Image (cartoon, rainbow, N blue to C red; front, side):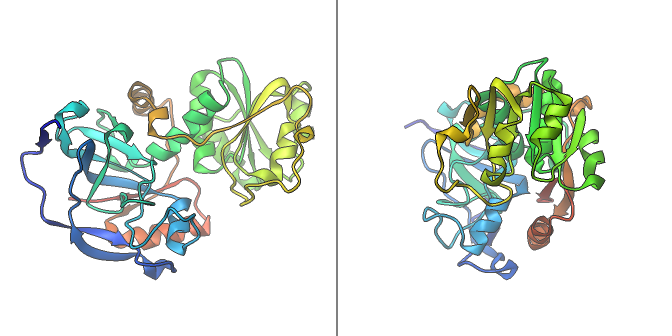
Length: 340
C-alpha cells in the first residue's frame, strides 16, 4: 500500500452536505453536518468547489432510480475541486485541480453535494485552468457524454454532417460546440421555434424545429442524409432519426429526454438497410485529461461555449437548482458553487 499524501491544512472532522434519507420532494434535500469521508486506499478525497445539477439526481431524490441507489445518500454524480488527500501512486498531488464524475458516485456511494467527496482514482481527471469554478463545474458530465458520443459512439470526423436530436439539452448544446470545433457541419433540433437562436449561438449551422417527423426536413437539406446522428430524445424518436442518416452512416443512442428507453416488440428491421446503430453510456475515463485540457483552452479562447443556465451559491440553493432544472424553463446547465 502506498503512503497517502494530504494537503497542508488537515481536513475538518465534519462537513456540510446534502443528505437524502429517503425518497421525496424538494424537502428531502436536507443540509446536515456529517463526518468528512475517510479515504480508502486507491481513492482520492476532493474538496468540492462546484458541481452541476443533473436529472439523475432528481431521479435519486424521488426514489425512481434502480436498486443500486440506497439511502441515506449524498447525491451528486459530478464535481470539480482540488485534491485534499491521495495515494502517491495516483500521480495526483494535494491542491491539484481535478474533475470527477459517474462511476456510481452519488448512487451507491456518497457524491458531490458536499464539501468533500471520496472517489476511485481512476475517475479523477486533473486539469489546470484560470476559468472560474462556475464554468468548470458545468463541464464534467456534460462534456464527457457529448465527447464520448461523438467519438466512441459516432467516430465523427471533420467535414462530416451531424444531426443532434434534442439539441437544446445541455448535452446537445455541448455536442454542437464540440462538433463544430472538430470541423463538422451541424444540424440540431428544438421543439420550439423560439429557441432556434440558442442553437445558432452554440454554432449550429441548421436549426430544425422537431415536430416528431424530422426525416423529410433533413433530406430536404441533404438528400442522401447526414453522416451521423446523435439521439438524445429517446426511443420514441429513434425510428425517425434512423431515417435521417445516409447508408453506412451511424446513429448513436445516448439519451431519452422524452422518457422512453425501450421499444416494445422491437425488430432489427426497424433499422434502415445499411445504417448503423450504436449506443453510448461511458465513464470518466472516456474523457482523457488532454482532451479536457483542449476543451478548457477552447473555452478560454472563446471557441467553445458553455451553456450555463444559472449559477447558485452554497448548499442552501440546491433545492432552487433542482426546482429550476425540473421546470425546464431555462436551458443549459445549473451549477452550484461552494463559496469559501
